[in-house]
Each structure stands twice: as structure tokens, then as C-alpha cells.
View (cartoon, rainbow, N blue to C red):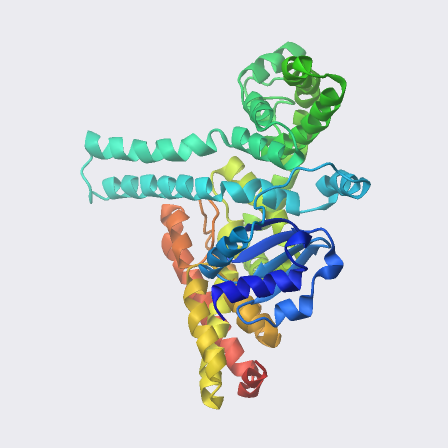
Length: 469
């Protein structure tokens, strides 16, 4: 099937052009919002050649898994048909207003929508931080001379790293504003205010500041972190919409921004920051019991469970809830141990697929062999959807054995305290964003996950199962 035929078939099964409200894409999936969900033919979509899977996060929102590279070509075809791409702003119905009210408290998707667009910056920042660490180690080991030129290069890398992480609150504020329908510049302004030293001055005036131990203060610059910024911008969006309704014309342009900030900043500084700071500290302390445990047994069990259950969490959409945990760890500790651990899930999938490839050869299933051969390279590079939706999930049991194998890699990473300075797609390339002392351990963990995924799948999955696809 050609790209043009695939795009047209998807259009037919999604209800036609007139049923598509909005369309976008990530590296492997088309993300489409429709007007009438009843017009979506899931069965026909799922059986279409070139479609690896169909996922419904919400009733009117469908993700169609196509795979890397091809998804961009299909998106271009959809654009050629005149389909709007990007975020649609429209008058909200009673139904969408209700969804907006409950989404912040109950949905994980909001965190994904806020932090996923920042992945390129996280990757650039993390890689630069890792490069700075490697240079420091090379100088310490006398591999490189301790001269100003080397130090200047190292500082340049640190500049890239700190340029993002140092102002993460600002970027989070802007992204949150986009998701909640507020002005991104006002969201960034609130985020910037949260890290200003003026917060400490205000705290001193109220008697809330502990100069000897600022982090133990009831209120200090950065209190509440990114979680506080997200909630603060949610409040800001509500206030801005209220002022837009009550000011008109030129007065709306002049007064709404300043009145919004005047109304929100006191609430944010005096209430949201202290409360979210307290909650963030408690969350971090609770996670530390497992993610930074000195007990090998607890660390191993934590790592195994997280890696083994990560892909089922992805299927349920629960993985979105991990995004703020990555950011919270990076914000508090400078690194995250959670991301390297769950990244082992990809290694388990690759290993399971290789075992299935061997079994498919035994029974002569050429089609499955070709699917696996095409999907494994993407899996190694950290793009797991082709393997999941094209190989292991349709066969069901290999999806489970892949997770069981991945758990061993997760246990290794947690026991070895493997740390990354950012989060991104997983796979072999992710070793570049690991802390310098964790790069080798990450690669070892990924290989363990791959080998165990292959061994468990090969032992417990009969060759006859590969005849089912």
C-alpha cells in the first residue's frame, strides 16, 4: 500500500475529512481529534496494512500507530487534503468545559502535553551536562590537559545545560499556559517570578524565611517547583479568562494582563508556593525511600517492578504521571533514577522480538520475520511502538514475557543507582544523557533486559504462537 493509499484509507475509516477536528503527529503516531467518535471504525483501522495499532485515550481522541518515518509522510498527505494541524482553539461546549474542570485533577495527559514538547531541550541540556562531566573526568584522569581551553569548552557545555534547567520554571509556565488556554507570556512571567530572589525578601518580611537553611523555609525562591508552577498557571488561566469577559476593546488589551498578575501573584506566592512546596518535599521524601534506598533488596524489587510494568502503564496512559516525577527528581537532585529504570522496558521488547524472530524462522512465517526485522532497529533506537503494536502485543503472551525480562534490567539500574541528567526516548542512544559515571551501567542494564527478554520469551513461548500473525 502506498502512502497516498494509506492516508486515504485512514481518512475513510476515521469518518472522512469533515469528521476531523484537529490532527498532529509524534515520531510514530497520528493524533487525531474528531467531531463524531461513532464514525471511527476501529476494527477497519486496526486491520489496515501499515497501521500497527489504534489507541483511544478519550472518546473523541484517537492515536493511530504507523511507525517512525512513515508517519511524517502520511501527515503530509493529510495536510495536502486540507486537514488542519496543531491545536484548535474553539468555543467550548458544556461537555468540554466539564472535561477542562476535571482534567487537571484526574488526568495524566495534561502533564504529558506540558512536558513532552520540552524533550528536545531536556535532551540538549542533558547531553551538554554529560559532555561537561566527561571532560571533567578526562582532565582528572590526565587524559586531557588541565588548561584554560578545555575548561572553556566545559563551561560552554554547562552554559547549554544551565540555560534550560536554570529557567525550567519559566518554560514550564509557558507550556502550562498553552495547555490551559492562558497567555504563554503571562505563564512564563509567573514561572520567572517563582525563582526570583524577591520571594526570599517577601518571606523575610513575613518571618517565614530561614536564612541559615533556606530550603527549610516556609517560603523561599523556587518553593513548590514545577508542580507549583503548573497549578499556579491553572489558576492564572481562570483569572485571565474572567478579566477578558469583563474588559473590552483597548481596555482588555491594557488592563487584563496586569490585573491578572496582580490578582494571581499574591495567591500564588502566599498560598500555592508554600503548599505545593510542602507537597513536593513529601513526594520527594516518599520516592526516596524506594528510588534511593540503601537496601539492595528494596532497590532491586523497585527497579524490577517499575521496568516490568512500564509498558502496561503506557498502554493505560498512566506513564504520563511519571513525567512530573522525572522533572521533580532532576529539579531536586540534578538527575533522575526513574527514567533509566523504566527505559529498560524497551530492551525487554527488543529481546522478546528477537526470540520470536528465531521461532518465526522455524515455522517459516516470512511476514512476521519481515515485521520484526523492520521494527527491531527502531526499538534499539528507543522507538518501541512498531515492536509493541506490530509484534508483541498482538501475540499477547510475548508482551508479558518482554516485561518480565525488562524487569531484570530495571533491577540492575536501580541497584547501581543509574542516573540520567534528562529524559528522552529510551534505547541505546539514551546512554548519552546518563551521568558520566552511569553510562556503562545503563548499557549493561539495557543488554540485561534484552537478553532476559529473549531468554524468557524463547523458553516459555512456543513457536506455534508465531503462526497467529
